[in-house]
Image 1 (cartoon, one colour):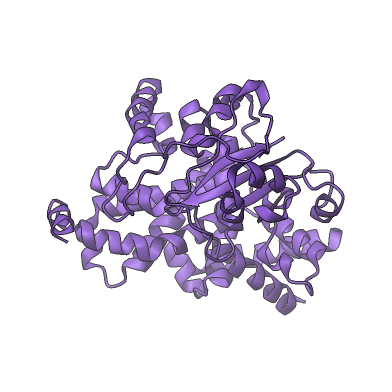
Image 2 (tube, rainbow over the protein chains, first blue to last red):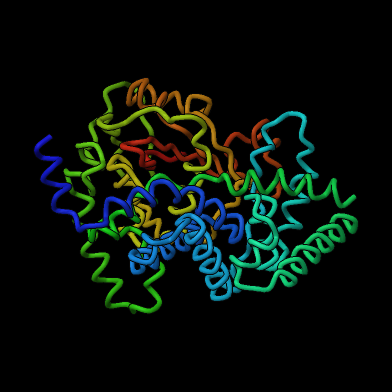
Length: 169
Length: 235
């Protein structure tokens, strides 16, 4: 007990609170990053970069009404930045979790995932935020730093493109 | 049509955003914040920092392979890479290049909680995309270090991550190769492990399971202090 106390005392002020935030949000941010980037290593890079930025701005983060939303915004924008730098990297249409359910049409799910993988990063970000995480499209626009009309346009184009790919077979 | 498509997409995306990170992510982030030397993932800085910094980081991190204390106060006491032991049973696994076969220590090893497929898959992809001996060793139990070194994996790998559709992750006891491992290293080494088999991209998972249990290779992972580590491969 004493050992733990002395260890904790050595930690820089604010670290404990920050680590609580890391623990609470890291999995959610990783899932979002993975849905946008499609590769585990890149998703981890994005999450780590998000937390590094958050650590540098920890005073600002401490004053934020909703630190989770702040982190989400940083993470999504990091994903888009990373995706631009890794323009050659492909989104891997891996096996979705539902495949283990016997009633699922695995081929249809894989087709859907493949079509999703062909979307632009911004389109994937809007779909992931809106359909995967439940953000209204106006909030998606705020997170992406675009106008609401632009987010709606990304969303509509994404659906059109997926529908076209699925109908083309 | 749009409603149905949105509904299907929602199901897909909810499952995607629920994807769990590899077990070490939180610890790595904590390590960065606390200034601890657990900087296993230096890729974001590599391009900017240049080769000299990469080498320095690798050298600094190499001491982690031999540490006997946890990287942060929040990890359980115990070494992440304890010494392996000689096989105790009559079984024998021939390793390539004459590498000696050893069994993993069970210190700190615990069964998976829930379905660890995604975590095992992520660890495996980290292995196949690692670019250095040090990075390979960090993802492997000491029992696998001889074969990692003998194979010089970091020089041979394609560097391409495997999509989950090209691998099969299952409890190690279901692998046809678990029997000799159990015979050599004991029942718990296998019962607490999970096996990942890589399948040729030209066949489906179903074919891989039913016709080719391990088309390319099977890799055995155990979980020590929440970290998945390779400890055997076959063939």
